[in-house]
Length: 127
Image (cartoon, rainbow, N blue to C red):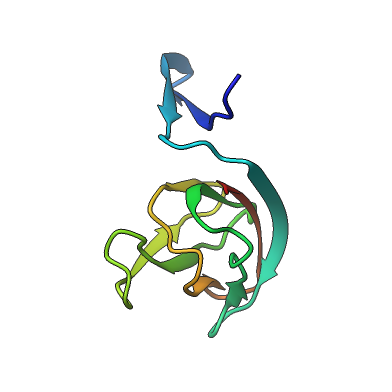
């Protein structure tokens, strides 16, 4: 059986006491990942923390979950598709997650907290 990478997303909400659930969606990524790395990082404000991903030749998925209850973090990375210094940034609100599929493992991957240090969970799947 070949190695695979699948991330499942389940979406639901509650409004005025009434709950509603939508379908669970699976995100499958082409490729055959053979390595997984999970990190819990306390990221700093101002300069943040650079996360070393250079042990991966290629990355299938990076999932960043902000475990803080009130602060957001900003994740910045270079894309594998465009490479050469094409840096992208995304804010991840408190308690939310970000799924990335186009990350250059040889470039800087940075997580910066907004107003106070935050704990984030980072899961990387690749080869």
